[in-house]
Length: 97
Image (cartoon, rainbow, N blue to C red; front, side, top):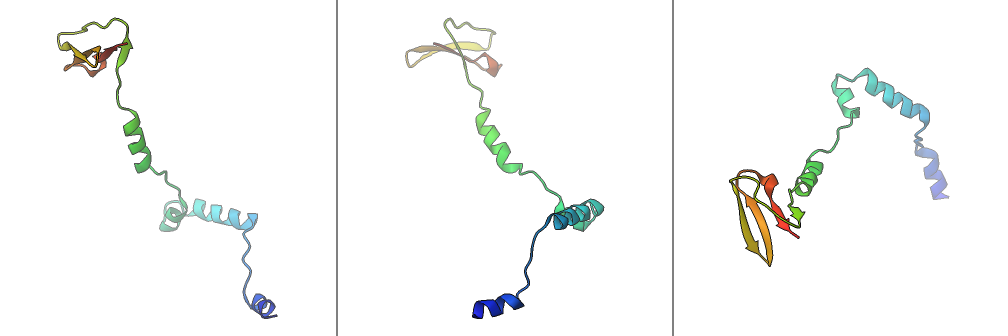
């Protein structure tokens, strides 16, 4: 009974399609003002770029026969494999596989 009495005095708020259209028209009308800035959406950039930075680390070419491509390339033997490491161009990195 107490619940019904409270239900009579509390206003019910319903989100309808009309209310959604009103919000979008407000955002469209006030696009340059401070009110419009409340409604505009912005992409989250900071988190995405940090994820891409860790993903874009340049790897090595894996080849059956590795060769020096320029005068900055030098061959190194590590872990039972032959590696080509270049001090001038990082694209020349190779691993014999």
